[in-house]
Image (cartoon, rainbow over all chains, first blue to last red; front, side):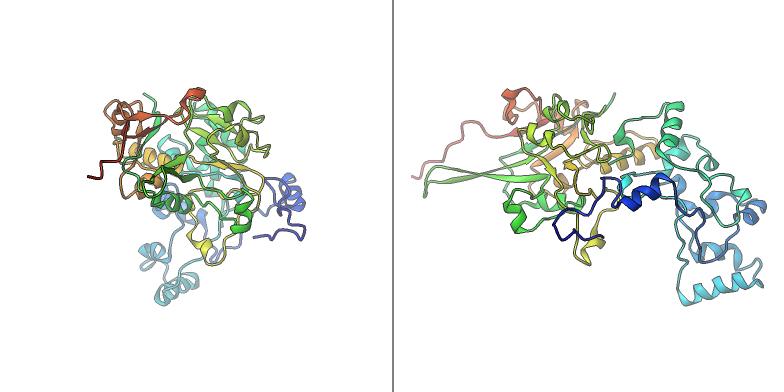
Length: 171
Length: 235
């Protein structure tokens, strides 16, 4: 966390951006679309084999967080399947050592956005995963393909007559 | 029917232990500012326990009054906000939207209960205290106002859970942190629109009164207090 300046003034540029540089990068959307993941997981490959999103992102129908799979989830199938691949052997070794995959977030909000997103109500309302995450059949390692700005959320909320009160998402 | 969240504070039960204050700080990530800044009026407590001394020693009597946002129906803080950061929701909450707030502090000046607080500083927690922060609640940065939300994150979570299980919300299952922590059960939270709820019944009590009711802000918190109380005779 940034320290206050030597004049004792708060170290914020605006309420949404901590510095002028941060505001500049946000305005021009200078954010990497790709994130380095601990293993090169291919969504395309798994979806072609007729897995569904909820097989690995188990929390999505229940709570706020969809959840990123642990090595144990991988090994439900991969203790039997494709065990000769180096990447699977790596994961098996990780489980034996008791370490887990340090997945990194692809989407997400800045702290200053004050957004509290919940997956479960969206799934219940019949919103398809691809509405917000793009067609994962076209992606190997997950990339940021949908720009989740407030207009994106509000347009859909309007169309589906969901609440557009600020407190629905910002608290 | 839409919910209308309200609270009853039973002053005859309150012992002034300040468990509600501690619970509120922990639940809502409220930063502390240190003694020097607190002396300059920059301390933030979404709920505070006011002390009132009556009479002279040794016949003195001490009473307590927990004061939090009264979630007024006709809130003075909302009318003065130039950005609609402070507004009334459908469920009768006085919402404070941090994204909209530009820190004019008009609302804090308009509020006669002094329950709105301005962030003079960027919130900081000494390590490892940052690990106890509640992930369901925003960290408010310097320059925005904040106030009691009736633990809106808990309201959201309870409603979401009820909807997932396809049932109605049960009275008493949902509590803000202060009411949950109160060992005397002095704070009762619930839906005023549900005539069967405990809070709706208690708010009709003849012991009830509202804080600074005469100013017409129509607060949704009822204070219960035995009327005409006097010290029992010493004999």
